[in-house]
Length: 136
Image (cartoon, rainbow, N blue to C red; front, side, top):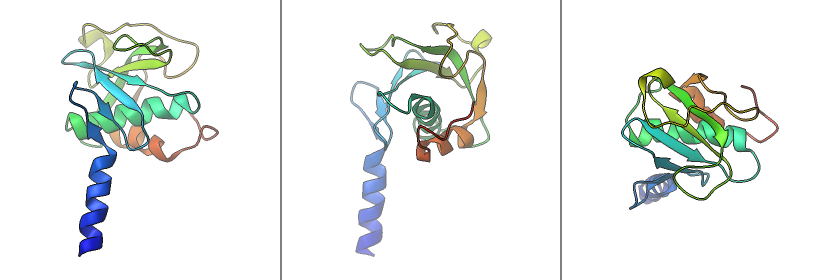
């Protein structure tokens, strides 16, 4: 019984909400809210493509309560972050870009593309992938 409780605590600590409204996945990817609809995933160097989708899926599910079959949409492609000083960020929402305000609306040549979407469950599955296991 003690092992189960300890394991549960470790798992819960792995995905933490921060006091400033931000969120960190168990893999260390930071997610910051931009407004009520838009959130920004901040990727660390290396494996950015999977970090973007992982962070979007984890935040949508754990912080926003979205079910695995809900869609998460790219509303701002990869580029400099708006919510903090970071070179690699992308913005996501649970609504298509045309239905949200406050997103960059930028498209990029790398990372998730403006308008792309994935099911929350599929996005979360990216958390366990390496940088060489990428598909968009």
